[in-house]
Length: 268
Length: 268
Image (tube, rainbow over the protein chains, first blue to last red):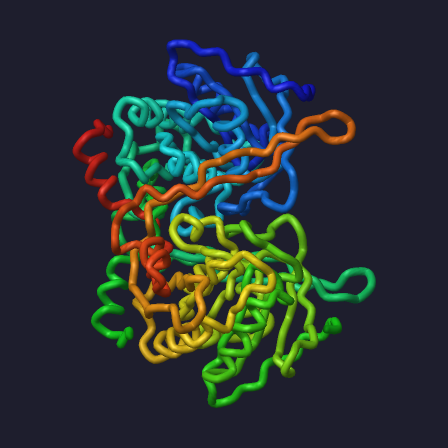
């Protein structure tokens, strides 16, 4: 993979234009598997971070300038790396690389689950959210296997068929999909379940250490705790061996809390 | 303001324990105004970033260790600065500084609006979301004035009364408040409106430049576009001179899109 600084304008074809991004970086096996798979249904352009950006959430880069570089990619795919966050990648892709909205944005395949509350910490999902915000049909894909050399082929046919359904009949405006694939061989995956986000969370357990000068520092670690017993959640579906498809929205309004306040608080 | 490395365990009092954080950094005038105001209703502990962290969204620091340092603060307030993101600050505050959940978390006062879609980019709001995730009643406050020397006193009485209402009668579990204060003198602020998040967004306009070596780089800039004409939105309330109070949730499930998929997609 060699770097070039010139941004070449994408040539138009009859195929739908598919933007591929992620948070594990442009070189990660997960995005390479996804980009190759998307070639079956569209013209693929990759714009992804030049390094791992896991846990970046919906961060944007406002205090530093951004670099965007064309990179030579396998199978001759058109690919760019960006010095910023996953959300920056989507913004740059639309504005600087593609000069138009792609027909679909797919983010991933993430190395590790983004089910349940992970959706808000995930750079992969935040890139997908940003695309949806720009009015682009959008899906984030994750494999429940954190390993660099995880097998992304097992679930890849689900990525292709869900992407095709999104192209044919996109979900309502303001929504997108959070798709998680269990870490199972293809013949063990039972199918797809449409889910809600499980009400689970991380419990922090900081790892305290002292540096060679004797000064304390902390590594963020944690335990994932799911007390949600619902059989309609993404966590339940994954545990049962299904691909979980959770529709996500970026309107965060808690309408039931509006009613609560109107009934219980004395607002002047 | 002087740094010390020792973390002193917070002493208990009868007053409710209030954690104060932000994304503009521990030294920002906005957090100083908020911390001082909260002293009227509780015992205040400040844990905030050691530098500006605007636009960090729900980012967490997983690839670097974190530093946490006690700092001498005005009025003798107990304050700590953290090398990480606003979300890291909340996690460290609960786990390392307070050794318990505070009774309330307030984040801000942010220098600039976090109404509408800004909620997902904002470090200030993400810190408040993180506290809510941990089961802590939580409010993010923002003043619609980006200037460093903005006047935080005009709206401060609203911060105190909303914080007190949250202590007395917290909003339902899984929700928190996004409070935005118009940049108006106190006597021009008309009161409080309970709102929904306006359906508005940023339209990117990257500023392209060349560095001294002739290589292209990009600054992220943008225009805020609000096409939502609703008179129940945060943007509308602020424009009319009200403090907007938008209840926010971190369950991102788009339930209407679940129905859409079940009706329109052929899922095997």
